Image (cartoon, rainbow, N blue to C red; front, top):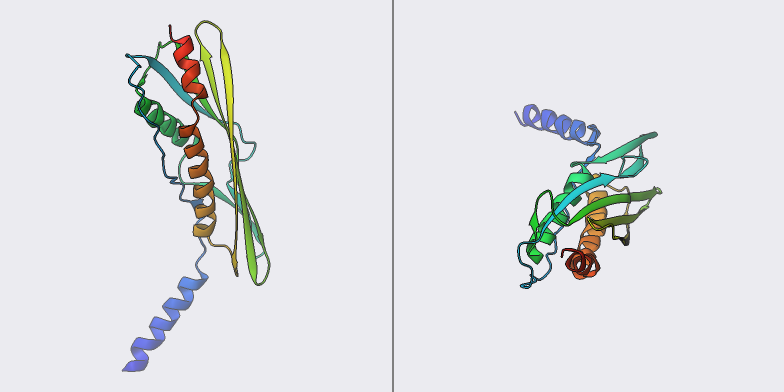
Length: 192
């Protein structure tokens, strides 16, 4: 009786261990919001996103002697556009077309470089994001935000390990965007 239960259960566990991992990384950074500026009176800005990375993979990893490209669970353009919209709304701006300033958030780089040995792995993640502001009067400003994060661990890097590294890097970059006031100051100066 015990053999009838244990053997199929062991086979199921072994098959689960052999199952291929997903090639999708769950990208869900924490969003830091800036303080509200009470002096803003109904200023509307437009925001859009762009992904200028040459390769859409967040990481490439060798699994079972095959190079596997790991891609994000969400389109990074829309994810970062949503983040910037939340941050600018928290500052007191309204989001919509036809405002005095247009913002574009651009993903220049976001990649986790994964190196693995028999005993340890290392994940080095870098992010490079630009916010380009263009005023209707012709004035422009570009602000670049860069962040990096490195982590090491035992054995092989899992998708969750890589996703955690990417999310930590993005969370740091988003927090830096929230602290920086240069785009906010530019909008206030050019919104008249």
